[in-house]
Amino acid sequence: MLAQIKFSSVFQQYLNKYLFSHPNLYNALILENRFFADYRCRMLQQMHTLAKRLDPFKLCPFSFYFWFLIEPYNAIGVSISSHKDVDVHWRQQMEPNETIYLIFDILKLQLPFPLTLLLLFSGSGLVIMDGVFRLLESAAGNYADNTGKPALRSLAPFKLLPKMSIYFPVIDSYTSIGFLTIDFRHLEISIKQVMEPNETIVSLIRFIDVYAPFPLQLSVMILSVGLFITGQINNLITKTGEDLLRELNYSTN
Image (cartoon, rainbow, N blue to C red; front, side):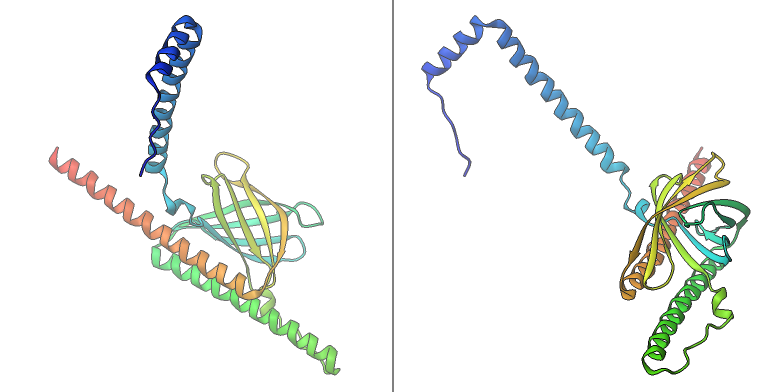
């Protein structure tokens, strides 16, 4: 039940006389009421426009990088930025404390969607294999320290396994934030910024190191892969629908 407030007629008459005897106050109240009425309408229009433009699929990760390290300061990376765009990069460390990097584009490829998915799942599998091996190596080292037995030696093929970087958009594709998996316990959060309009040179600044339980990192990796595939399927469906509408409009005209 809504509450109702009633004013007496005497109070209303007094208020009217007071406002008419002070025209500046009366005009200010009227103008302020009109201003806020228009302001509320503009706010509702902007919220309606924002709701139309808001696309949750734009929050999906838009690029995956698989880095093959070249000790001590370089790396070669393969990035997947859409269902058909695969790029090859060169990463250069700019200072000894591993905070600032520069990424240069070497090669751009257009691949079929199934082949892109194959690269994505193959790279993810190699990253998971690297994390599992590092966990086994750490456990074997702790066991050797406690028992005095020789530890598990690092096998050469496992040193060639890649690291994964996942980036989420902040400002279109020019600025993004993401994380690099060092192993299943350690990851680095960094900001990626395009240095020139043609997106050939990219800066990478690492600013947070996170140590988390390995199930959490593994779940984030799998969830990111799923979100990336979902976003790319949505883009593919949207593009197919736009092409069909364009063909229908062309045929009717």
